[in-house]
Length: 270
Image 1 (tube, rainbow, N blue to C red):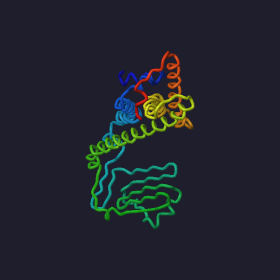
Image 2: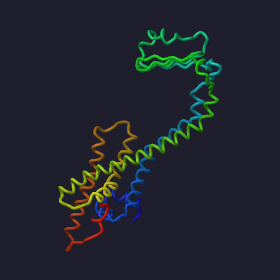
Image 3: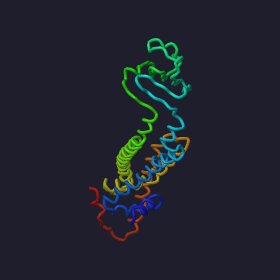
């Protein structure tokens, strides 16, 4: 059976879980991999593409929101001042000659009302974070920078984003299969209570398919402006419920057979 068809059936056809037990391991892990690709596309790729379309990309953001600036020979210059103040945060960037901030040992009382502060004048940068105030003169840094150079780093920025996305996918996929392990352990308890014999490997296989709907619900929830309390428990609980319903269908199928049918299921994932 096609993997995509199996994932669709796993959402509503509990009888199909009996057929899933005949799948080879590589097909099961392929199903989990495809499921994670779909989830990752919904939660990471699509939002990033929407961000790119909405903003025009990093270059457009720099052009629209970052004024021309240059740091050269220990002197900072910016086309126009930037000032921002909200929620205990204060940012002021200027290169005007009459706007020179006090040194770090003198400015504390003037920014005491703010939790976070970021100040830049023509000769230094001052940062306040968690009560700590630190400052640095540009002449001591020995660096040259400008908006044009920032533009040149945009391709590298996309490479970094791509690297972060790949790392995130690997981490999320590993976490998915670890989550299936938890579902399988809970499914083992459920199978024992229902007096139905299944190996841990079989329950792990069922757990992969049982994560389909909960994972899609989790993806949809990421687009909503609110979150459900205890959603993580509900999410995994739904997967266990799928296994319980699948076992119930297996029991019904077995009860309708005139003789006991021995299959390869018992040897899987031992």
